[in-house]
Length: 186
Length: 390
Image (cartoon, rainbow over all chains, first blue to last red; front, side, top):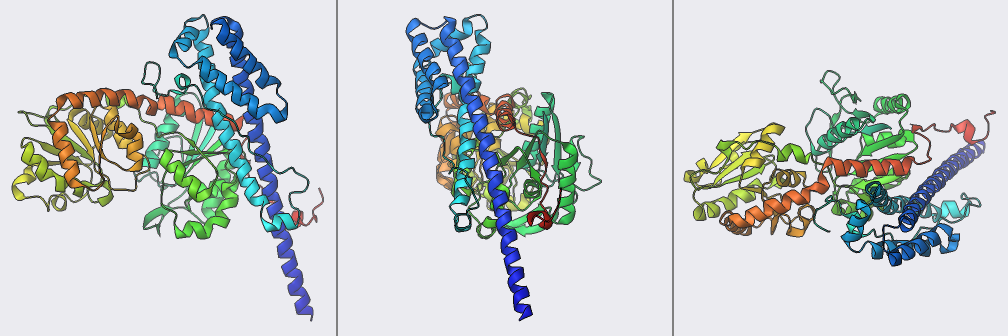
């Protein structure tokens, strides 16, 4: 009789330790999502800022300036629910404005333009990077949260179910070209 | 930035991953970052100052070949100490899905962890079995890098999630500036063909090239084949008719300098690999040196060669197709000149200046606002049960 009780107690203890360990794992994943989301926000903000700077600098033609300014402004001011759409529209605006390499050349030729062009190129390349890391963390957390042990024992507590950040982050071809200035378009 | 890099394979054994880590560490150090590399190595082997030895690797049969790996309590303790003492801003581990130092580091550390997946092995039975054990460790990785689109695809299929593609780097300038060697260049109207790789490793494809060689020599009798790499030379030419054997010259193992000079000298570089390649750094090196490239149409090769734009492709393992393409290229200097020119423009994206900037961008993305790397303090049993009072 006593041995049975001891065995049951031991089994319960093991289950408790396992559940506690899983909760710790989940906690770490949530922390990773938070960090990845903060990094993504920082990159998006950086991109919108450089775009807005360019739009108000007067190096682009008035039509392009207005389009870019509007898109950058909307991306920065968007409500959380509208964020993905607004950021996608900024990507589209950037692609439209920098459809030809002549526009980029014009920016580079302006005083201080070289640095701005570099900043913009870095920003449009880092947004997809940060988004991929964020969505990778989200996927890992969702996979664990869908597991029976997590649902049955409510290990996730009140944390909201993590959502991927979906947007069009395709950079303008002239800025994404890794062959360097003067290289072939790709 | 303080960067800790974990190399899973023995530092004293040459290999693609080791070279990649060496070049990355040197490039980052050159930019003013503090880099420490933890790698399996014998205590007495001479090491560069930035390498910390993690003890001797044990040869173990794994995944169809003998891998030299580190595991066990001693290695785990060393990894923890290195993580603790290093106080790194970011930890960059390589090949975390192999049972090695990288997996131990992933297990022992917390904070911003970046991982590079080099190979694109088909899913192994061991990996499926180990998946539940692997997953908690892999979950800690904040950013995954795959060395090619092909490697990324395998990674996504096997482990889920996503990765950014950053190719392996090459010091393009080093290869482009190498001095050609007259004895390796074509003479008296005959051309030279280059091959670099292990002779006795069938996947490097020398047997395919040997089968194609009689056809090539029948059409272009003056051609010479230069083979650099270790292995049994007698055995390599055994299938070749006796009178053709002197058209093959074995150079043995060559230094980096001689490799660059060889690639600068030859009229055509052939990569007849039959499989097991996830990137194809040698093709980038050949293009950097301005050698026209003819390669088998492996996924990874096709990608490095821009789908056949920057170098020519032939159907893998088809000696006839290889011979036909080689004969055509050797007889068409204009096409080779076009390939040289296209290749040297194409390789700029693989130069360390580009690749290093991308790797640093990943580091900066994951360290933005995050705490630095620290040992993962396992919560004790008593703490879990709420028995410990602070």
